[in-house]
Amino acid sequence: MKDAPTYKDAVEEIDSIVEEIENEDVDVDILTEKVKRATFLIKYCKDKLRKTDDEVKKALKEFEKEEEGMDSEAL
Image (cartoon, rainbow, N blue to C red; front, side, top):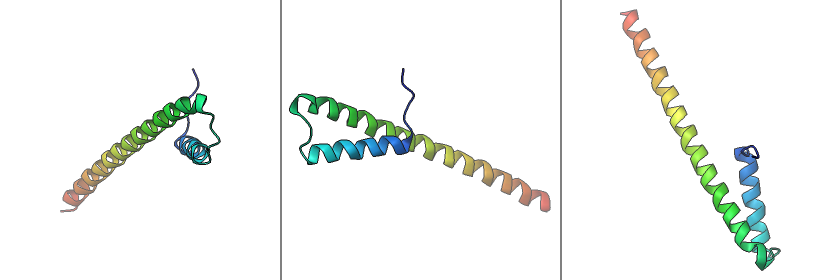
């Protein structure tokens, strides 16, 4: 199985597919496959962004707890 693309690679591929479709460079016979691939990549990117957002929020909460602990120790 092929490794998952990076977020940047996925966005670049989506842009490429959109450009092909807008320029009508896509043969009708493969248009469905291009749309399916773009849909997969969009879902992949949304999921990656959600996971990143969750991880950042978790890290910030942990940081805030550490800060609160430091503040109460100073008293």
